[in-house]
Length: 436
Image (cartoon, rainbow, N blue to C red):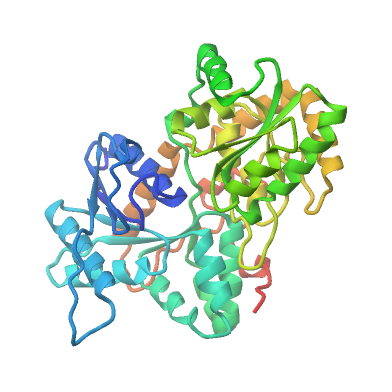
């Protein structure tokens, strides 16, 4: 057993955001895989919510105090985070620092690793490039020049991992916009893929009595055919499309009942809108138990996400969580969403009208058993155990390389990628153009 200890740097405590939650899933799986305690360093609030408990095998460390310096007015928080990460690595004999978001975490992790190297204890640094890194830190800041230093921060790490092929392609396109083909080619040689992984609980089916009780508490009919979505209640999720589908179905498919669930800025507006659509329910602030019940009770999960200025989905973990329970999904064919679905039967073209979405839902319902089996088999590849093993493998290879002056380089079609044969190699030529 490889007893590597990881310290993952994430902004929020567990369950405060999607990436903090995914970091916890990885850390929990790493604890099982390695047999040693893993660590997560956060700095944006200390929650007392019981659902923020990290559970066995993972210790969460919070930056509790940020001391100022009147002679040096900027950078207090970053220094405090770096100091906490430095302490955790030393106190707990950590071997690997793993970042969630490169901005500002790449610079912090590099700084800590360099300082530890002076003591003879330099850990391996894995930079995980997430969707927000590309869309906000890179694409939105090409013109003003602030994206440029990020590429230098990334190249100082030992491993450059991206959450999806689409994320890698957009990141490489940003690199080309900043430094031409030379920079893009240099980074392309080092980018490796590490898809998100779902924890065992994501695959656990609630029992029928729990589903019955959930429907009752939520005001849903016991005999309806549920069509639902679960995620952020924000403009980019295309939730008005779901309301429009429900409105059409109220007259033509009375057996269907629609649910929009999640949290976000559109919550109040959606609740008011649902009052005008008899077969539409909005559920806000669901517990993890009720979220799992909603997924399991659903016949088809729908994700009509759309492109808005500054945002496009770079993967779709929410769709994967439905598929893990054998629930087929329909999702917009944009960005990295196709990588979270088995094939084109699970995708809907962008800007498809509500009436056509309803027809596609009918097609899935007519072939539900077969689509369910395909969805479950596909989601079975995306386990947190597999994601954790990928991290261990990458860290082990990175630590063993002779030249640590540049990031780890793997064969473009390394063994991990062969399980997704439809995916293309991560090459600069496939990079999508970046809008300045």
